[in-house]
Length: 280
Ligand SMILES: Nc1ncnc2c1ncn2[C@@H]1O[C@H](COP(=O)(O)OP(=O)(O)O)[C@@H](O)[C@H]1O
Ligand SMILES: [Mg+2]
Image 1 (spheres, rainbow, N blue to C red):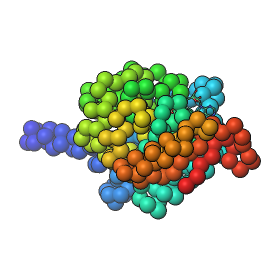
Image 2: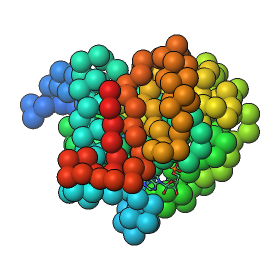
Image 3: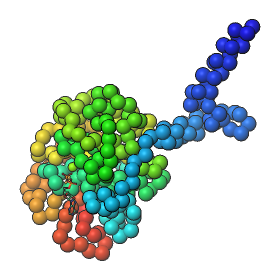
Image 4: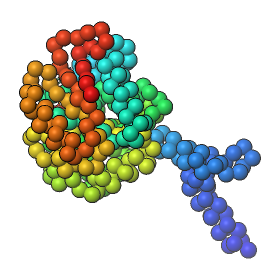
């Protein structure tokens, strides 16, 4: 009898320890919550458990990441965020890659600003992933020091939750501070697509932003684009030749939807769009 009681107690303890059965998933009368509420509570727990990102306002300012604070400097990114959100809602797009023809167009700066802008929109859950595995820069831009890298996460050597950093409770970053070997093979692997699906499920994200390597330099992005819903192309004003923009747009359109083109680093600004202009 004692052994039976002990076994029952053990089973009860195990049940309580399972998130779906914990007290938090029951209402005040002890009845189980509807499954959607249980799932929401579980997702909140996952977000709560992520390590928090260090808020480094001085580093962000230095790296032109103005979108954290809001206000006039953030306005162009907030506008871009709103346009992307409309597409997310209307077209059902969730995975957006940010691309350019060559390095230094301002992809990472744009992605980081967009992510910071999304972080201020608390009804949206977003994830930002640095997939420029050859020249990762998101961690440096955001002033974060990491012990693990995306290669280890993709190879399942490090759990996702240990590597991600959250800003608030609605924006998570998967960053890198070291180049990863075999980037093209990794990005095109089925495992990478499974990882993105895991991320979407686990963090219940509405949108995932990918910082990508330049298209004209290596084939990393080409193979990866089949996993995304759309791409935003960043071009450098007065530097990216029109012919190149045209070729790039056609290349990208063959692989995924083109969400738009961001004209970055303009030397002029106006009261509506600041120095970041975009057209669709
Ligand atoms: N709108 C802008 N105006 C001026 N400099 C910019 C702008 N956007 C980015 N930069 C600068 O250009 C350089 C390259 O930006 P980065 O975002 O790293 O480009 P990419 O990711 O395309 O290689 C950085 O020094 C960054 O601070
Ligand atoms: Mg970059």
